[in-house]
Length: 109
Image 1 (tube, helix red, strand yellow):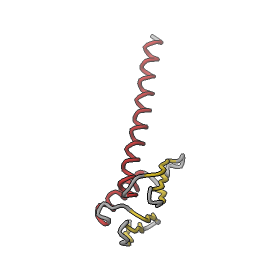
Image 2 (spheres, rainbow, N blue to C red; image 1 turned 120 degrees about the horizontal axis):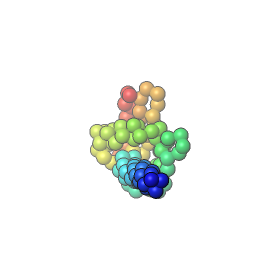
Image 3 (cartoon, helix red, strand yellow; image 1 turned 90 degrees about the horizontal axis):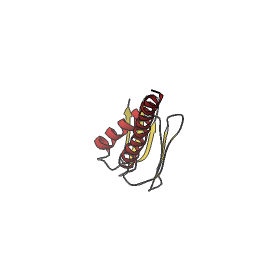
Image 4 (cartoon, rainbow, N blue to C red; image 1 turned 30 degrees about the vertical axis):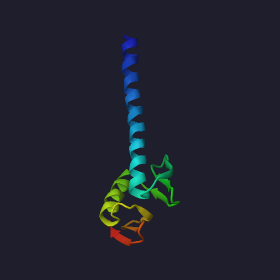
């Protein structure tokens, strides 16, 4: 019985770990298109939940959480035509960003 319980616990642990790795891979791909519009040189997510990115074109971003990352994807498509950002800042009441094609925007939250 202990053997069966050990196998079940191991399956849950492995499933949880694979989702974490898959989610990190998805985040990396999203970031490369959403933020950079080019390749990513460095990508990390800290214990504080913040996502830190350095792009191949030396743009640097700190994204507060997954929700902000998802919204940035929408902003990139709507305002930057999918080209990515050269600068992006999240403020308490609005987002300020510059697209890779040098167009500037302030969008209220």
